[in-house]
Length: 316
Image 1 (cartoon, rainbow, N blue to C red):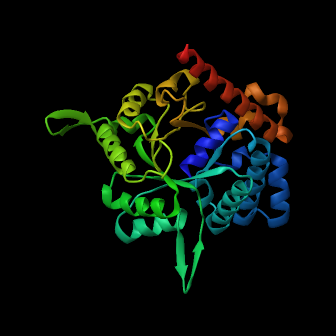
Image 2 (cartoon, rainbow, N blue to C red; image 1 turned 90 degrees about the horizontal axis):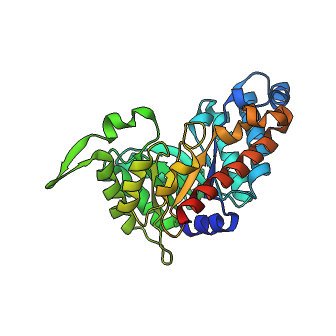
């Protein structure tokens, strides 16, 4: 699956993933009105609204980007109807030939970790048959419980030729409270996030495709920490980096150059509300609520140009 992601990045010339993180305050009124008219102000009504909202965005951007990243918490808050909307969104995106990164941030040990890996990337046995539950192409994983929580995912990645993105240096302001702490690594001092980066490189070496330069094991490194991105890029040369924090969290194209390798690959940049709620920004207000999907498309085009311009400046 990592090679498909790379192929689609090259085809679209857009190392971009659109975060499908719907909240009711983003959903235009005409969509909410129709959903509530059919299901009432219920969990089912909310789930229908976010599903229709997602569908409109996907229809508008699927030819521009290689991947989407639905954040499961935004769906779980609506209970079982929300999870059904998540599943429908994943399936619809796959029908559009988009690579789907399930932003599930799972992290546990033993049989629990195995169950998470099976639920999101693998298949579960029911009697004599096997079924895929959510069937994303990648999943985000929290490695801070250690290798016990990661190895079940590595096993499924090898079996299914799918991938994971492990949290290394996250984009939130308080990440440094733990991730930047100094620890002893033999005779040298390094931060906790550097230690995790070394593990990611080691785990990745165990999960290389038969052809290609990048592992099934990726890393999450926030756009809000470009210097840390530079350090980790050198530590993990064969690791694809998922970079959140662009746009609404303050990251800009100029902050992103160190996340890429010299081949122009190695990173994919996420924007969520900066795209899916673009119509609420002054820059895209001309589209109005009815044109929310067109506003999302315009935001993708602008993001693609911003990243391309930053990378071109570095090449010169």
